[in-house]
Length: 443
Ligand SMILES: [Zn+2]
Figure 1 (cartoon, rainbow, N blue to C red):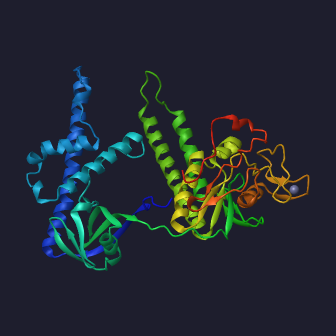
Figure 2: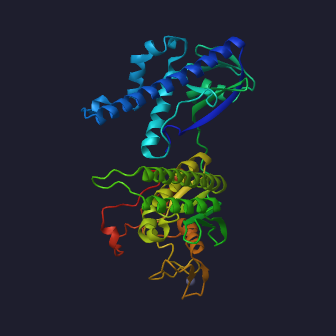
Figure 3: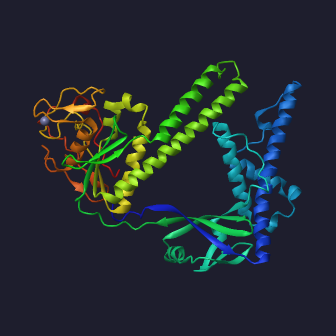
């Protein structure tokens, strides 16, 4: 890992600013100009589509190239063609204010096409008070002044020292700046790409095994079998999942797209609703994953998880409803980079390690463990334990287990684990005969 570039994160810095009356006029001009560009392009596209529809209705041939496109570059090109005619004053504002209007409108169209949003509507003066500029249009002059292109040097209320130092040292880069004004007050919000120096990896004193569960979403255990983490599917997530199921039932009763038949308007509406709830569920899950992974990376030195494929192979059906493979992949991906940020390490247990079937007390391995068995009963030593907790305990103990192939190394950052099943004396696992090799975590 050493020698590679430091990982970067996007961080937002928001400052209240104190513009002069002339500067306020400039800020307003930018916000108004961006709003104008957004609305003008939107109405050009709409007019064009309406016109094409009317032509089709009277039997005229309308070709694909007669339609205005809604990708960012299409909108930008359209703006360049029309701006002199529509907005002869356009030169008064920084050009990136218009560019971001194209970006935002293209995104609004894309969301509508995906079904996650309604058809774009004009931005109103009443509700829309901001515009975005390119990072190059903004620069910090010192710890109390920001220079905005066309607006000039504006005083900030708070100190910008922290960000200023990043920019000064070259460990930060402003990607974009959003100017917003409400009730006579103005702010500049900067999205900054910041390099994060990596802390040294801590010695593995606090170890946790995390199992993606059947009884709980995530179960965490210490090597001694103490339950230290239990993340259930939160109530609000379950509720939205129920709402989703209902919305899906409604959509399924309506006339959806079939070969040669256009979907009904009612289906479109129902489908839009389904898409929106999907997006909402995904949002909530994302937040939950973020909270959990941050907590783990901050509070533990070594985190042991199952290999994704084990999860996929053994648990797929029962898990599908609660957490998709994609969510588990995301969970591990976040742990991977967050452990680097916070100086902890991540280890993926060998994909053939039977963490669910092994007794965490005596090490006996069951031949079979049904998905409906919520508790682990050991016939050898009599242990009775919640199955997820048993699996998590096994994972927590995994890095210190001796392996036939020699010592398992937990190498620094990312906790790369050497493949431990290369001993030729051992009979190969059926799935091992495939070309897949255990994946080092840092890969
Ligand atoms: Zn046992």
